[in-house]
Length: 300
Image 1 (cartoon, rainbow, N blue to C red):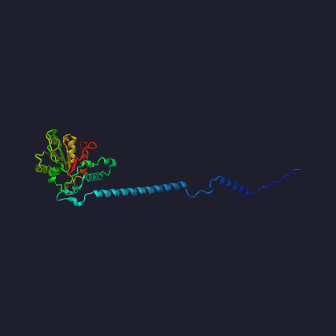
Image 2 (image 1 turned 180 degrees about the vertical axis):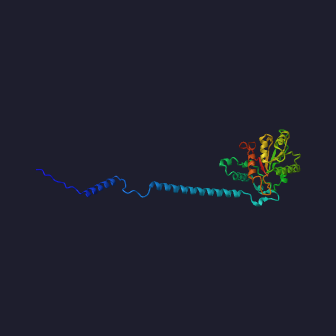
Image 3 (image 1 turned 135 degrees about the vertical axis):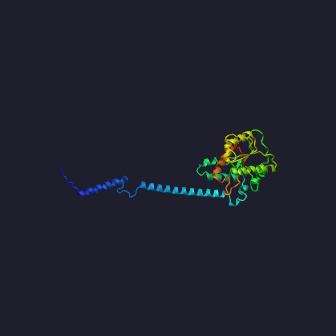
């Protein structure tokens, strides 16, 4: 005899609780989705940390840049000329008397770096004068006045023989000055001083703008031989460009570096003079290939 059993129905509230417990169990078993969303955004926090890290790196970069600038400024200051070296009465900067080839190269190149702040490091390096091209004249301890230039050349260069008749316009010595007025003074000094130093009948040419027009100078150079050519950077470069001034007999390029004007400025102390001077010195005729131009430049 079969019996039918009635299963009592559960209250609705208990069923809901049971289902909720069942769902909670599934979620926990599967390591499921949290029921409450986190109050912070993990991605946002990561970005903030990244930005903070970038800010710190940027701050470090700025500190390093400031440190490098201070170091460079200190380096420039160390290489600057002492005020006591500037003898306005004699019109000379006596600091050059103590500089050997390397110190001179360092000083010249520091000025190039100062005037070329907008240039890249590669561009600057192309404008640096190698120390090997500079003759050491630190043994000459006397003030480097214009009336001592002839004696200086005689002692430092020894052989100052006249150039041959050909080619024309090919001096053995080129003197570079800051201005036409200064060049005229140097020409007079050489014409009177060289004979006293034992150099007979020196042929000294005026190669600067205030003396004559460039066309006239070109004609003069093509017709006459010269031993010494005295001029300014721009005019000398122009004459070289025109193939009027020849380097066939060239033994030295003398830079009138010690001379200063009433404002205590020399040829290396003014950007408008320094740049054409460097352009002239680094011409291919002077230091075209590596190894060329050794001790060619004489800084007076």
